[in-house]
Amino acid sequence: MFTADKSAPELAVAMANIVHNVALDRDSDASRFELDAAVLRNQFNVAVALAARRRNQVHSMQSRLPNELWLILWQGLELADRVSVSCVCHAWRALALESTRLWGFIDFHSNLHSGYCDCEECQDAAAIVVEKGVRGCRIPARTNLPLVELALTRSKLSPLEIWILDIPERSNKDVYRTLSISLLPHAARITGIYIVARDLDTLVILTHRLPDLLSLRTLRVTCLACKDSGTESHGASPISNAFVSPHLEELVLSPCTYWDPAGFVSHPALRIIAFTLYVADQLIPLLTASPNLDTLVLRLNHVGEDFLASSEGQGHVLPLVRRIPHVYLTALPTKLEDATVSSFAAAEQEHFVMQLCERGSPSTRTLRALAGHFNSQSDDFQSDNISISWAREREESAIELRSAQGKRREIRFLETDGRSTAQAIWDSVPAVLPRTFIADTFWWYFILEFSPFPKPMPNVTRVAFLHAEASMGCWRPSMRLSAGTSLFPALESIELCSEGEEIAISTEVLVVLVNALRSPDGPPCTLITRGIRIEGDTTELASRVNILPGADRIL
Image (cartoon, rainbow, N blue to C red; front, side, top):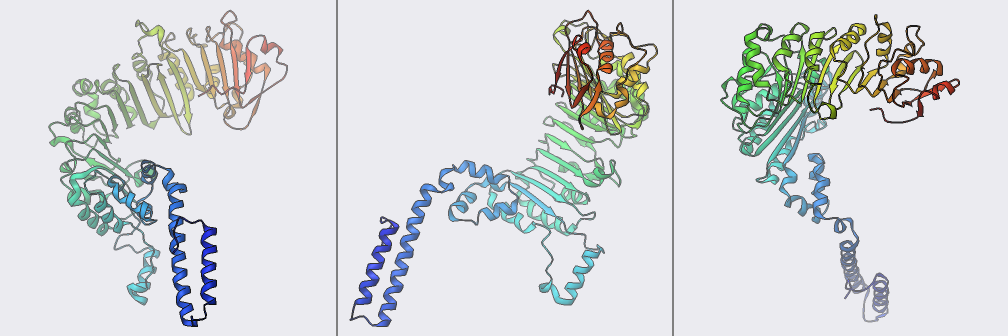
């Protein structure tokens, strides 16, 4: 009687006419009228639903966006939200179930305490169970384990990535035994495992119960306890050799995780590896078994001191690491500094970064060796742009040498004496090497304290001072400076940066600074400031430099 071809006003008028005719029919009793009215209501509802569906097909967001875009939007959702998406409507459910890769990303989380936990929260929950029974206990769900099996079923044969987040100090082991049982039939499809936990006994359970991960490409383990304390604060968790796939490309382990690669003959697929070296004898087998490494992140701690200090050890390690483009060494004792540079630093490497774990400035020998990786006599040196920077973040300082072509050498350390660091930089880096000099403002204070005054760097064209607000005492006239000082004769730009509130620097101080940095006979120079207000008459300053306040060139 009613069809979706009619408009809403036409439907309303037609229904009103029919109800009116039925009501005036003398042969129709009251009960018959109620039945006819019910039929009319049902037909009207069907017609409205058909019309709404036709309208949605034309105007809804579902029809205007391609299915591929919906899948991209859903892929970033948590597992519980993706399950909810599949329950919104028929169209979304069909699309979600049709895309098996949508369920290949499984983010498992557990906030369940261990079975013997006696914390206040667990005691309260146990008291409720005793008093009201399990059915009366309304403890919030702290794990999405029931959804994992659903996602595994919906993923069918798609590759799997498993992300695990576990916050409690002592994890619930039964949850991970159940998880490993669910994952075991699908182990051959797992391509990545990412674990963030405070109790890495979960890793031990998984490694022993999932031995055949033939498709595993990535294994990343982050220990929250190590991250909070800055070091491994408990016993090491071992990783089974069988757990590491022969096709593994990326292996990143927390400081408290132990892996013995001695049993491997070759790992040609391994590109990135980061782990703690607990036994010095592991180093050579590791490097030998991974001939195609691109990135090596090694935490040395206090291991292998005699091995690295020996000429035999250095002779074996250096040929193997020379082919690795990116080498990062952390937790390095100061007494191993020179031996580590001799063993791990090679001019062929693109990046070499070392982090000292003890207080003290890097040695002049280390800086000189790393600066030697930038050959100022090579044919391509004239087209290169070497920048040297000295920056501080809280208690840690960093000295970096970087070329425009990508080569980088960096030393991070807990500084105690800025004067010795400044002196080491100036004595170690060849004066003709840098083209750019970037430093925290406090560096200028130590330069003023040099005796004798440092030699010029003739090729530097840009100087930048960072964090000017933190070292206001540095911005003062110095009786030691004169117009003939000229630390950087070829200087073209001076940059001053304040990250906090705007600070004021007098023109007198800036004139002395400009005179000390550049040569009066040098090229035209520009003064770029950010977060700095220049106070006083700028006539004399403007005669020496072109002032550009508010520029954002500083990186």
